Image (cartoon, rainbow, N blue to C red; front, side):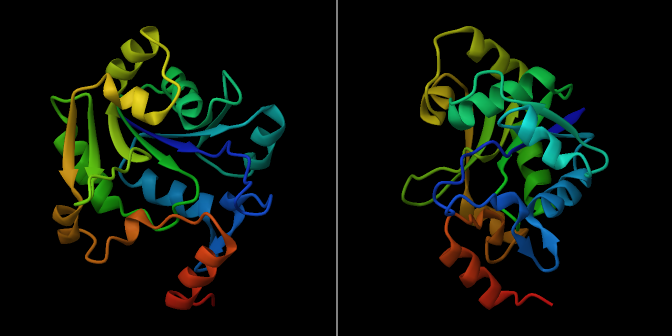
Length: 199
């Protein structure tokens, strides 16, 4: 069984306080696009929100479970922890809510190459990685969270057996690697809409 975890609990400081998951792309909100894409490749989708109040903002999205952070203020690591505690899949795909162009084919491939590892994480030529667009073995994360406390994604990943996947290999599934598009600022959204105008 596979799980998809969408991290939606950020404070949206870089987006001027606006909730990025409700930004729109090609007529759909970011969160709706992510849910639709993940539903094609996983058995369950879990949205991790900041708190119970934010959980309510996703009540209209069918076919997902929404859970709050167990340890608020810990960033993505805290969100992944909450999602893993809820997930039933042996493997989980963790993704940030501000990535509206995630490719189902890329996610499928990451699930495939995660077998036998604690994680499958895309890595660029310069060594930068994409830990919030990656597949993790749920039990490996459970054991990691039971060990020394992880304060960052770097800490979390350091305790895992990782299959680093060359991002260029993923071009066979997503030629322009749009799957890694990350919207942090209004300017990022404007650039995305210049490529894909809203209808």
